[in-house]
Length: 176
Image (cartoon, rainbow, N blue to C red; front, side, top):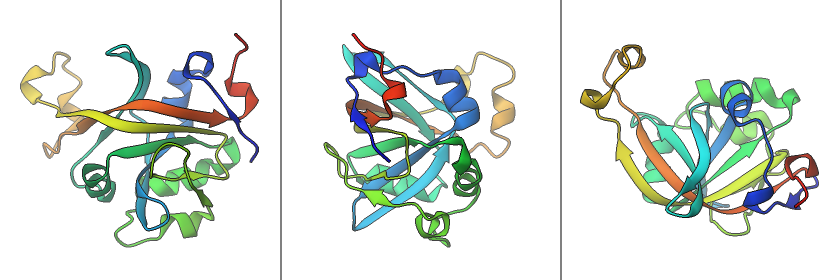
C-alpha cells in the first residue's frame, strides 16, 4: 500500500472508533528475525512529557508480552476494513502455536525508526520506542465496572511509547 510520512501533529483519525471497532495490530520484536503480533483494542494516543505518545495494554500471559518486554520498540498498524477478520484471528490466536503473519497473508516491512516491522497491507503505521511501563494495580480502580475485566486477576501492563514516525494513507493527514 502506498503511504506518506505523516508528522504527528497532522495525524487525523477517529481515535475512539479506531481503538474500539477497527482495532490495531501491535507488533513487537525485530524484523526479520523474531517478532510477534496481536490485535489490540485498548490504548490511545496523546502527548506526555512534551512528546507524542501511544499507550497500549498487554496481559502477561500473551505471547507478545515476552517480545515487548525484551525489545525497546513496537509498531501499531491500522488496516482497511477488509482485513477485520484477520485482525479478529490475530486477537484470538496465540503466536506460540500459530504463525499469524503467514496465516493472515500479511507482508512484514522494515520500519524507518524502530526494529519492529510494519505491514505492507496497513493503511497506517505508527512506530514507537518504549519510554515507560507500569502494571495496573487493582486497589487503584475507581470505577465499579473495572474488576469484572479481571476475573482471574491477570492485570494488564501498560506501555507508553514515544511516537518516532508515522506513515499512512493521505486520508490520515490534515494539511497544516
